[in-house]
Amino acid sequence: MKADVFDRRALREALGAFPTAVTVITASDPADRPVGFAATSFTSVSLDPPPLLVCVAKTAPDYPAMTAAEHFAINILSEAQKDVSIKFARPLEDRFAAVDWARGPNGCPIFAQVAAWFECSMHDVIEAGDHAMMVGRVTAFESSGLNSLGYARGGYFAPSVAAWANSSAAGGEIGAVAVLERHGALVPLSDENLSLPSYSAGGGARAKTLASQLEQLGLSVHDWFSLLDL
Image (cartoon, rainbow, N blue to C red; front, side):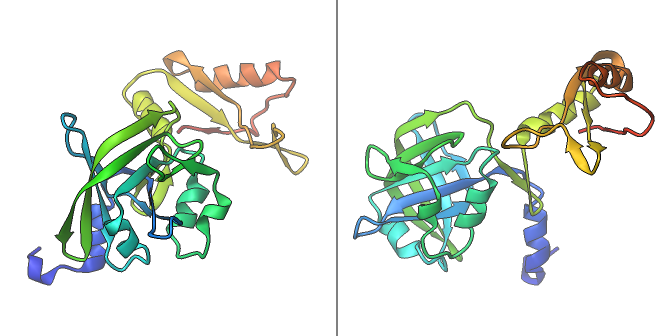
């Protein structure tokens, strides 16, 4: 398709085929108030020196403050922080009130429970169509070991689950997950998050392995249960 006849929606959908991590870019405005926005356009430019790059839309409410900041931070959200991504993708009044955060070494807002964070000094702001590229040099960072939140084709996903599925499809160890209902409730339930029983089954014996594990939990397994391969 020629550039002069691009359909913007079709182009956006095509670009969405590339899976990315979900980040929230933060900084402080001239009054030292926290500002930030959700972004998937983030990349590492180099390791030596260590610059990072992120793009911000010129129509973003915080565009003037972000591009004028001396420092900014990149918070790579963990797979449990979908709600944080949604909050910072919308023009809400005080998005930071609903997030646990603290100031980084250079004063940028750093979120708790993220997969990793990077604080950068602003190196350059480059005009790029309806966006600007912010290039920052890493001055501090930390990785928590948590899995990151992924985004592709307009939806969220957990990269760890995707990797597990690819491993199973390639002939590796297979994972089995059961979705059970008893007396109108899902089984089992935990105090905070719904937990579904999942087990590894070598050699493709998903049903037998899962049935055996469920019976050990005291559940009578009949042909009413079904398996979901992730």
